Length: 155
Image (cartoon, rainbow, N blue to C red; front, side, top):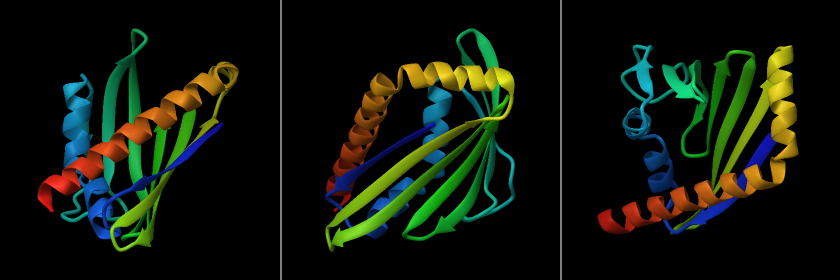
């Protein structure tokens, strides 16, 4: 099951990619929402091989998630592989310069079930795909707006 959207951001591609690569901000954001996030690699700079262990509650159950950065091609693309109980997700973020001060970000999430219970979960998600896609696009648009605002405050 795949979700994808694209957003145009009023900022140069390097600035957008740098903001998207501020992984510490994402870690803190997840922690504020109640997740336990632990970085498990030893890399000092962003790059392939970065890994996180994440534990969070979802619908009354504790969920474990392992996230690995498998592609890091500055300033064009990042791909994350996320594995959880029975699910594997690939999240790709591609940036394309439209002009000196405008960047298009294409963000895709591909969810694949690995066992029967995960297959049932994905099947139920497919029934709500229209509303989930709307929410996904709205959240990405909101985040793109925050990136624009951050860039404008620092520029």
